[in-house]
Structure formats: C-alpha cells, structure tokens
Length: 254
Image 1: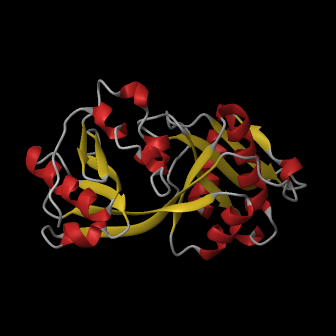
Image 2: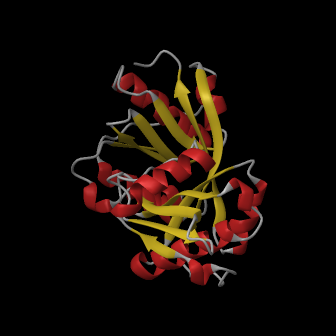
C-alpha cells in the first residue's frame, strides 16, 4: 500500500482538485468548503478523507490505495474514535488486509444537475406535512422497514406522496440532506408492496429530483450496487453513475 502524509487541515481536501474529477462527487457535494474550520480532514497522494466525528465515520475519495491508507492512519491518530468508513471501491480490501471488517456494503453515490423527463403519474405527487407523520411511519413500517430516514428527522426538508382514488397512500419519499454539506439527498422512497410495478416509485423519484434541482441546482442519492431495478430507473432519470463506493465497520472499534 502506498505511503501517504496526513494533513489535519480541511482546506487541504480541495488542494488536489479531486472534487472536479470523475468518481469524486462525494467530495464535491458531501464536504462543503464552508465548514472548513470545524471538520477534521486528511490529505494523501491522490486521495482525501474527512471525519464525521458524531458517527465515528471516515469518508474518503480518490485512489483506493491512498484512501485506504488515510483510513488506517486516521484510526491510528484517533484510537477508539473511528468505527466505520466509506471509500472508493477496492479500499475495503486494502483496509481489510490489516483490520477485520464487517457489514461491508457496495453502493453508488449518484447525482444529477438536470431535471429528469416527466414520468407517468408525476402529476399525482403532493407534499406531505407534519400532520401526515403518523401515516408515513405506519406506511414505511409496512412497506419499507429498512428505510433510511423517518418522519421527524431533523435532516429532512420535505416529504411527498401519492394517493390512490380512495385517498390511501401508495408511495412516499423524502428529501433529506448530507450531514456535512447540507446537500439535498433523496431518501426513503417506498411503494405499497401490492402496487409495485405501476410507476408510482418512478413518478415520486422524478418529482423529488425535479424539486431538488429547481431549489438547489442538483440532487443526490445512494443506490445499493446490486439493485438492478433502481439502477435502471436512475439511469433513465439522468443520474450519473461514476462514484462507486464501499462502506464497512471496523471489528473491535469502540
């Protein structure tokens, strides 16, 4: 594994121009320059990393070998404080040569700067307020128990849904935000299990994407790598597919 030099100044996250390169959009959108003073970051030869101290999570982008070394160096520099990490695909294998890992998940950070084509049923999407939170909790519990974000989360700026002719919720989704930068992140899109295949999820995803692009200039989301239907949908809606990531927990970390 190549040697790297730790630099504990967040400004150095941007001194290599990685945020402008293909495969490094997680840095471009996820590590806002405006939070340089209160974020710990490291820089190496062709990679950068930054710490989400609340989660004990190190994020990294760039060359897989350099990123893996930054994760290991961060763990050595802050013993007991690093519990998990995200890096470019392949960095898990390199970290795993020296530390035991668990819960390894390959995923794609996807993003778009343009409004998507209009989807069938998109005109049926409506915004949902706090008065609908109990309904959303029940719906997500029944149709998407592993949802990433729930009603009432401080990171969520908007919930939206589609109802059938009887007024029953058939799909829902949220616009959340990336913790460090506040960038819009689509989350918890779910469809009634008995109504899947009718385009409700596509309509809701397109509507939320359009809203985010108009309000913020872009939209981001996370896609599990082996989710082929989601990949086809995001391709159709214009989401970029360049940022292949992996996340893992470090066994024995506090």
